[in-house]
Length: 91
Image 1: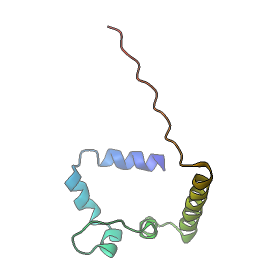
Image 2 (image 1 turned 60 degrees about the horizontal axis):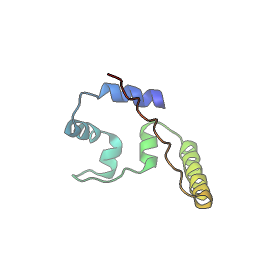
Image 3 (image 1 turned 90 degrees about the horizontal axis):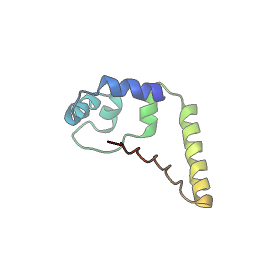
Image 4 (image 1 turned 180 degrees about the vertical axis):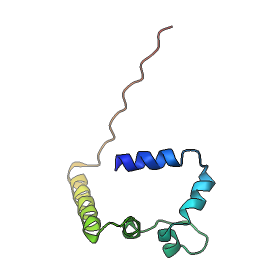
């Protein structure tokens, strides 16, 4: 998945915000959910369908999210990892 995100990022790195918006509105999952103008979330199922993923994949994602929520209720929300401090340059 990281490889795919890297590939897509490189492919579209020179596009502006509005160009990317216009490109994504050509996707079938956009047309299915928002045939007119507007902005909202596309359901995960439609995104996975557009990528050729199975119902099993959707079920696994939902199960993982359910587990994450239960763990979060028990132990509290996950704290983001701290970024390493930048190294100060010596001049």
